[in-house]
Length: 268
Image: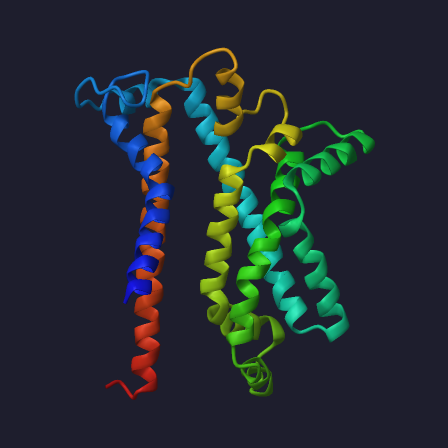
């Protein structure tokens, strides 16, 4: 009993340490003050100022643009890589999995520096394309790791049965395999989107000088000026959007799991 109470208190303590700063930031996004901790009255002015700050809104648009594009590319490459690895020989599968784990365990600064050196060696100009390559290299492995467990949970004979019934390989891929691994694909997309959204190091090394994201914009102005208070409103909006997506995905997966159990029990 004592261990159970201690374990619960420990979990709650960790959750408080993790989320209290975010909640504090959200609370003080509803007051006009340059400092967190100084309450000057309830107001939505920071949210109004947020959308009036053209430089910050441009950085927000750039951030979501590179995150969305890189997440799509990473999802396609990671999904195809996971499917190809799953149906490959043991030797090829082991090599692919080893290569996939390198970006996960490797330091982000090493990835950024190596890609920057490669861009210079190839005489390329730093642009949106080089930035996209960097974000894809960072996130594609996480899509692979999300799709792989869904492939392992899938009935291995379903695809072969579809081929035996006359389906072409491409049709069987779209109609049999992809629906089974769709939750893993979506999870991989959301994870790659979040990682790209939050990235600073790779973005700083591979972007063109005029292209600013949220992280590079804040880093650029923080050395000369205080952080704009409307950033608190922006952080609250991003956190709320991510929270809604997570809750929606959890509810969807729980509903789907209940439907599967109900189907296995004969609809009872």
